[in-house]
Amino acid sequence: MKKIGFVIPWYADGIPGGAEMELREVAGHLHSAGVRLEILTTCVREFASDWSRNYYKEGLDKTVNGITVRRFKVRKRDQEAFDAVNAKLISGNTITPEEEDVFLREMVNSPGLYEYISEHNDEYSLFVFIPYMFGTTYNGAKICPYKSALIPCFHDESYAYMSRFKEIFPQMAGMVFNARPEAELAEKLYGFSKSGTKTVVMGIGMDTDIVPDPGAFREKYGIKERFILYAGRKDEGKNVHTLIKYFDEYIKRHETDLKLVLIGGGEIDLPAGLVLDKRIIDLGFVDRQDKYNAQGAAEFLCQPSKNESFSLVIMESWLCGRPVLVHEDCAVTRNFVSEANGGLYFSDYFEFEGCTDYITGNSDAAWLMGSSGKDYVKRNFDWDIIVDKYKTFFREITGEKD
Image (tube, rainbow, N blue to C red; front, side, top):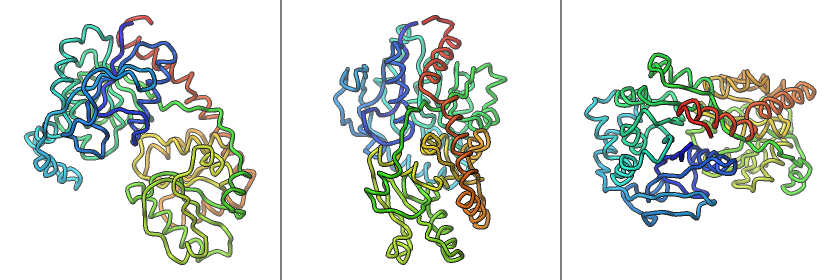
């Protein structure tokens, strides 16, 4: 098999973002397994930076974990025009095809990258784009869709309904999904079974040899009482404000010493009284082992987000032997919980209260849910399994051998 070219708007070790982290992990493990691959990206630093600014030097960069990275300059964009259309999409308003063209033209784009794909596509067996909504994906995939695959990271959101995506995505050779509900949404939107696009529900690989030390966490942070854990970005987009509201109500209704521990970045308003009484403890960023130790010490992890394409913290909690509580309105996390029999889900305060009472009051059931979740992760998302699935899928798409 010739090279695989992974295409992403920005790429560097340590930059934030779910798709960015997923590609770093996938590329690193495939590279270690002997798969020939390169990263094709722009000179933009990261998502939160100016998409018209070339931060990195153009050309070959072989300093990212031993993997060849080709960087291409971006062109200056009309941010005002983009923002006007994007505001409509964020608000859930329908936009015209002409406005879609503005959106795709005035976001992050690199003519040099597209020229390279066009002129050098014979050197590659496949181009794999991630994620779906960026100019680098749309304009790059249009060049040779017959040898392009996509790791879309779809959500049920206005961007996924754009007509331009419905034109190009069914022409692509393959789709790699992180979860079954994502695949079901994509089939509804794009009809891949009719277009002949090959699809696979892959998931995200995990290092499954996590060993938590709950005692070390309690000793280090001085938390002796039982606690619910939230691990992730603290903003309303993750629905963490609902968890905080429900926990506040739970404390008012129960004679309990239960605490809520938050770890991760971001800022959100917390009830002053609960913070003062140390019923809610915000630890901010902690190192990876401390996170695992916290997950192992918690009664359960609560992942209240309604909009996930995967959830690493759920898988980590299971690997640490603890159950999870998720929001019913998130099809992806609810499906994981149901498939794994690894926890419960809630839709309102009283269901949250009932789930919390059940898990904290039934240690044997909590242990069984955590154990079942751990087995589920090891069966489906161990890196050896994911690497083999990628290699098999690439061979299926290209018709080539290793």
